[in-house]
Length: 236
Image (cartoon, rainbow, N blue to C red; front, side):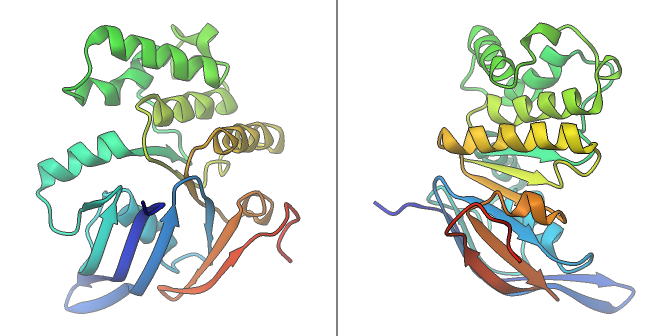
């Protein structure tokens, strides 16, 4: 059985604005296998965030084929796209994206409430397990405003992993954190990867990128480098 979790074939993404075509991605062919830890880097505007949006089914390609967990998701309906995204993808955003009037437990549970295959008891057990994994179970009744930035990002990671997704997509997960909290979040991602999680992370930080076992560079909408790390040293 193939280990491929994600397969992109000749993906193109074109944005049309006032009769101007912007080619955000051109001929992207990429395979990500189960258990890989991949970083995506490149200058602002290079297309890396567009690529992450396509991987996470938040956007659709203009051309090309995309298979996720053995499912062809290239031309599926919006409702099916939402269902697969909810079940297969966990998101960690730079700005945390927690809902201010929901407590920690409710924030983590929210994506699970859209899962018809889970009952309330199952959801509660999954939330508890996720919060324990990120060491935030003791804050389950706190609201985002009562937490530090690092704690909020830990809750965001718990929300991403609670549904046991096939892949975790992290978009600049340390971008809003100081160095101490950034290191704590990166250590958490390291642990999740060591336990078998597949992670794809967009980052500007070479130190964060060096923790991945595969580094992809994007330039002008194309993959300019795809390097598998042989050790944990930072890429020069």
